[in-house]
Amino acid sequence: PSGLISVLFALAPVMSNVFAIKILARNDFSLARWMAFLVSFSGLAVICFDDLVIADDGWIGVLLLLTAVVLYSLSGVLLQREQYQGHPLSTTVGSLIMSMPLFLLTWYAVDGKIPELDWHSKSPWAVLYLSVFGSLFGFAAYFYLVKVRGATAVAMVTLVTPVMALFLGCVFNDEPLSLQIIAGTVLVLTGLLFYYQDAGAGLIQRKTRLS
Image 1 (spheres, rainbow, N blue to C red):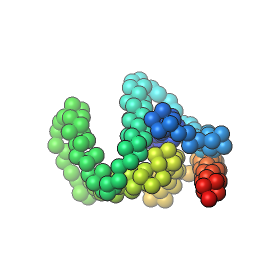
Image 2 (spheres, rainbow, N blue to C red):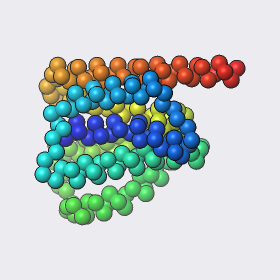
Image 3 (tube, one colour):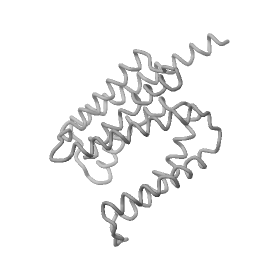
């Protein structure tokens, strides 16, 4: 379920922070930020509570997804360690080119058939949108923010994703928006608010000491 995927990818800030401690020898998470993250993560758990049921061979997908989260977090920290100053678009295009063989291999192993596109349905347009905005422009913006703000701070954006998806689904696809979802959303946004408030206070203190 997409809710479960969002919850697992919300672990990216924790993974990024762990890798940053080991690789960059720097810990950006204060106790207040850890508490803020736990509040946001609890909100995600409330939103996706009904989806947290692993049936049959679902554990295999969860294990693979957790592996993806670890690699996603590690790549952001390694990119920050190298202090690469190239254009974010070049980083994005390079990443997509390197990942294409694995996408093709996965397609061949799982299905291997050329799909028949129905341009009157939403599916081709959704894939096109994800390719252009979700991958090309989205990752270009991501790599730019990694260079400017750091991998750990950028990873916190993953907490907003399920909230936005829920509200967009409600508006455009008439998906139900229950009190449980609203309560979880409030928790997510509250945690993010306290996280960035603490991060901003820490930045002001560092600038004050430097001056």
